[in-house]
Length: 71
Image (tube, rainbow, N blue to C red):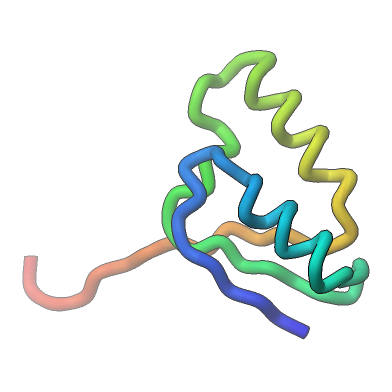
């Protein structure tokens, strides 16, 4: 199954609650569109956040927003 969510801005509690409720497994993917916040600080806080999120049983992918048109 593929799940899509919007910006998390480094607050992954919504994703953790979702995973507790739905119980996805490693075959499932969640795409975070926009600002995930995995590399916001560039220090130990980011490393800790990544470690915590690596323990949930879903594949996380960060999507990117793009714009089209004349610039």
